[in-house]
Image (cartoon, rainbow, N blue to C red; front, side):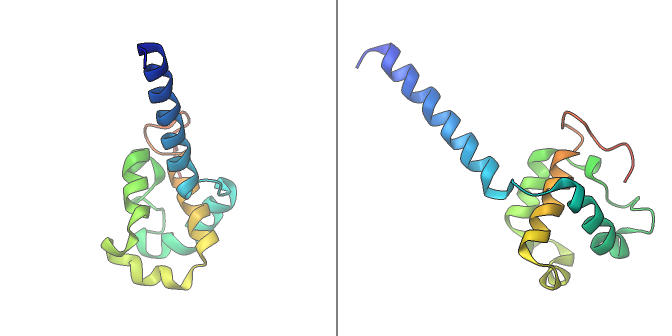
Length: 107
């Protein structure tokens, strides 16, 4: 194979891997996620959510947290929350992370 074909294949594989990572958690509703975050998360993370807000972490850090939620202290409380709602909360936190195009200024 020539270099042009190999380069094209590498680019296609990179795009496909990025797209699959984005859809692994993505597709949620950030607006609903903000409401659900306030409803479910603020009770443990402070009345003003000062302990935890989207801009406390990068998008990669939020992805890591939601990839394996069993490693975080409050994961047992998440059993009460539906999977689609968790996805919406993730979308809100991820979309407004400190390295996102529009980081959260306040929650």
